[in-house]
Amino acid sequence: MIIGMVRCECLLFNAHSLKEKRAAILSILRKAVNGHNLSASEVDYQDTWQHTELAFVSIGTSKVHVERELTRAISLIDFRTDIERINTVYEWF
Image: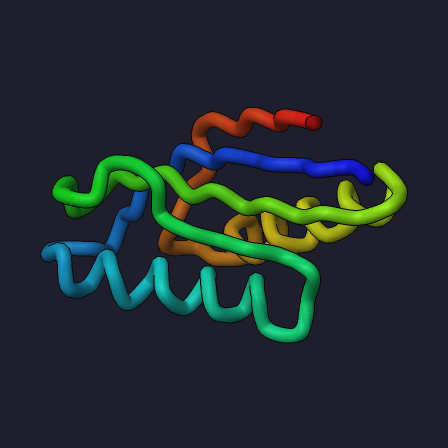
């Protein structure tokens, strides 16, 4: 069994309040887990309105499958124009 985790530190450009930040993040997190073998959460900077860290975790029998799920989740961030990924860390267990 392979467990993969990716942590993405991000900046949100159009968020002017915590409420706007939560709406943008919730959209990403819901799309990431919808119908996929993935868990997602905001893990840091909860009280800062233009800064966040998101974590995505997937478990599978092959590293290729787990990496594909994590890459798909990261692409949800990269396709948006209101959020920029500034630091990404992969961990494998």
